[in-house]
Length: 216
Image (cartoon, rainbow, N blue to C red; front, side):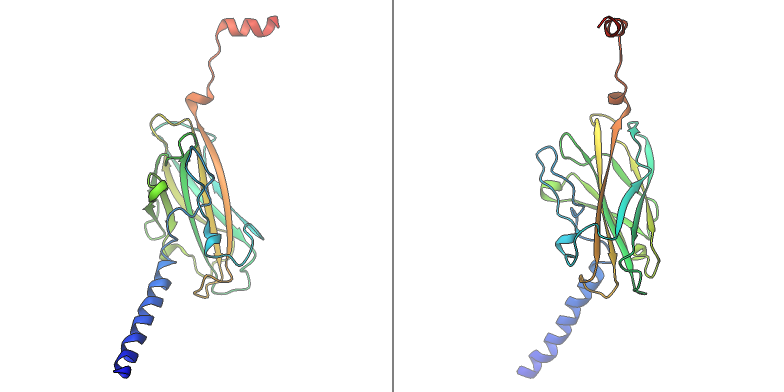
């Protein structure tokens, strides 16, 4: 009987390790952007919770390019996740990953709609629990950019909410991995950007308010 269990247990362990190995290239679990607490919704964890060997934001950075200072409801914007790090430069098996989301600062709910630009590189997943209204863009296995030198980028489309949202904050986490198949020896970066709707930004002034400012 012991021999039977021996031969059954070994394949089971191999299947478990295969599942772990496949899961990471297809993105982290949802809600790992390090988003701040907003509108009564708690702060999110970040990739440091799993890849915790080093302090976040050491020797590199992650940023969002193309975020409009002012957004127009219903308009689609092409954004780029820009990740740079010198920490894995010596690793020929280095790889890269990211996760991002957009949040209504007033309510903490997800804001706008994400669109996939390159289906081989990025995908969209749903949040759960307190973050169930948020959507997250992750890199997929085709987007880990194995062996690519720093910096790397992924493209993402974001369509602004049609109405009811005045300010949006974008949160992003980036990962510079050494590609050894484990969660050790990887570096985590976090970043954020903000955008305000055009109606809120344009504060109307009456002739009376103009005159009063000169009379003061």
